Image (cartoon, rainbow, N blue to C red; front, top):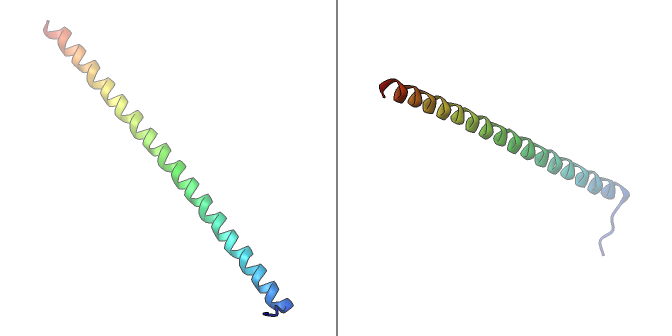
Length: 67
């Protein structure tokens, strides 16, 4: 059986704590990036909808003008 010294145990625990901290930071960064991407997609959709509304309004104005 392998004997684990107190220093070795402390090193192993510290390593696990660091790994967990990096994993949590990575997950937080991924959630933030996904939230940013969703927000930007929503902004683009809103912009496209405004452009569509402007075009439809212009078409209605043109149709009324020429009829």
